[in-house]
Image (tube, rainbow, N blue to C red; front, side, top):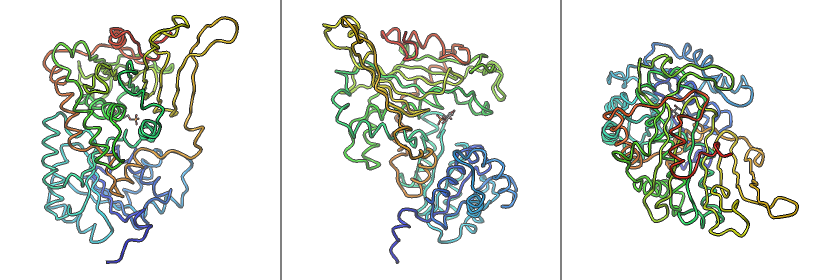
Length: 493
Ligand code: BG6
């Protein structure tokens, strides 16, 4: 066997099989990300993309569809026609009914031998994950392949376990790439750099010095044509079970021994397993559910969740969740983590706020004793930045303290462009790097933690509280923090 060249190691050959090839995710995220990787010279020259979907199309018609539906989602500079043409040459289309296992033999014929590692990307609903994996196995296509599972992986602990069990009989854990695209965001990886590349924060990163932590992922968008899906899902399953708990685990984890996939994932898992269960009456105290009503986002009137296409009449699905979480371990015992996410909120912001305790005694007046005057705000999007808030003396006579900020805007500091989350993650799948993918036990721990909340909402009639679009959610979310003598960052002054 000839040894792979360094270039092949960097950009290994692959056959990328995209199930759900005509779907929204393929058009908006996956194909644009593959295009960007192609444009940036990060794909092996003979890497192929085989899009698979049920619609009867030939490759030519599919490519015309791709021209129309993918190009608008490619971020950055104008598309170079010749680069686009060479990207199209990588793509073939196979019409296939995923519920018909016989059809997978012809997929095998299309893939043929060689062409490097096979990657099966399942950008379909979770109901198709198991049938597709089984059909791939019976067509003899799974040996040495990788499978990528999009979220949502199941609907609750039981259904996600059922999928993981069935997929696990076909693929080994190190062949399975569970996507949480938040882990591919530059800013999220920067959290690791910030925490584990600097000695500055580590001594303070613990219960002795941290008063509370806020994690907000706020969206201005509504359900954007996904009413049908979203109405079955809601914010807890769509955002908290995965993205927010992943962020929390990175913020709270112990330093990993190395950046190896399992070293990092072991530490995240420990945090997820240390989450204090929220049960019974505590759910009503610590979890706020909301649903948006009509309102205005930046002067544009938007309609209520109820009026969105695909949403059931009288739906009680939540579009907002705020909750208090505790991590029961030596480092974090007693420190509240406040998590919040919602659609149709006042801004699109993802940020983490670490509030440090005030000084124990102030010779400088009451200002120094105010909570929140020492704080680290890590803005993940938009405009990734870090702000360190401290107190300084106002110039002039006397000793009057005032809040000041040290700001670091990453896009000003680093001139090079940022890689989109999907691009990075797809390149990782192709190269076989698992660190930024969710391991089964992490996913299970996250589902296990949200399960009692899901159960309570389903059985106890805990209806979502209304909030006007364009606000920061229901008043109860503010009251939750007020009970802990704090407030959301934007509520200060
Ligand atoms: C997805 C959710 O996982 O994340 C969507 O399904 C949500 O509802 C999206 O809008 C948010 O991602 P981002 O990268 O825009 O913050």
